[in-house]
Image (cartoon, rainbow, N blue to C red; front, side, top):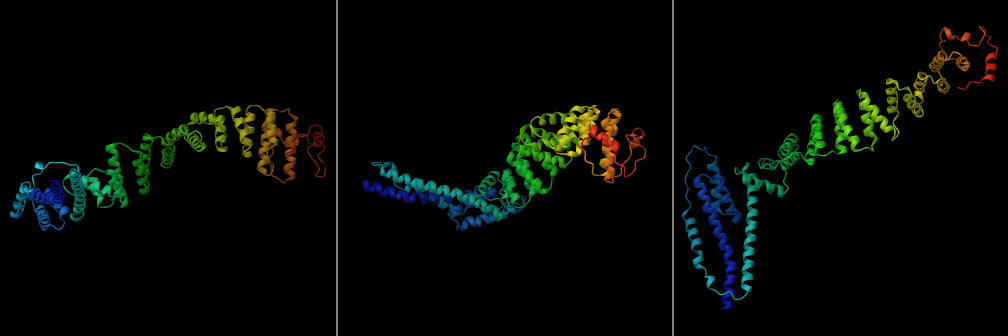
Length: 460
């Protein structure tokens, strides 16, 4: 009895898969012919493709697929030919239906041991694995269907299956792009269009994805790169603004500010750099850009507030210091202006003249004289500039003997160097400043010598 049970089990394991496959094949053929008779050509083709997945050389399936394709290409108004399944197919179906009556009745056999069940389970596992392979082969047949026919199936579910197959196989090319697009897999469609250098279509696909699912930073980065490659800077600005709304990243804000500056969108650049300076307070470059935009575009109050704040935390550039000092002068805050110029001249000595002006406006005569004595005297312009300052000081302090001596000393040095100088006004003509009207060229400056011994001026 045990031997009989083992033999029966082995026979079943061997016969059941083959019989089941034949039954499945005939079933697909029968359904395919039914769909063909009903005018459902796409469904019929799918059924016949299933037959080819089981038996690639099946002549009936190949002939039926060709006939379905030819019928589908005819106008709808034509009467569809009715083709019944061949008689041999019906006979095969009847044989499959009678199959259970021909096999031994297993229900009457006692299951005495676990071994037959184990063997039976192995057989079933083989059947399911083979079925899984057939399903996968069906997807491959769909792929072949599109590539051979040149168009997609009309059934949306089949299109999605096809698109997922492309994605699984990492196929992103001109053939896969329409399948992804029709299946509404816009990111994959965009990648396919990018690979074939159709950047405009790629951008359109990414925009569709964003409109359906909302902005995603990765997608926006791809869009920004595409618009950069297309040279569409205005669209890049729009993308970076969307990126900033999704995530305030310093780099994105910096690029947005640069693009706005390039496109003359000053207010947009200011907003970008303001957010950037709040996020990153350790990078002077961002703050300096914001200060420059404030100053150049008349945002004086904002410039003063930010510059004064930064001056307490770090050293400002020469350009910003000069702008800050000018701003103080415009607001008549001369003490702060002179402080800034005092700091600035250590880097830029040419601003000493502005420092002297602010000191004179504050009546700080002694400090102004000291700064005048530090001015260079190498050319006519510098000599006349120095004499101009001395003249202003003399007007403010007419009794100051030191100023008269400095003016005389400046004239003397300018003559020694052969510099051309302009005389001061009639109230300060050189002839009236501690010297006789006519002086012999060989005669030394005796009066200046006496003044020099009594009150030596600072050297230039």
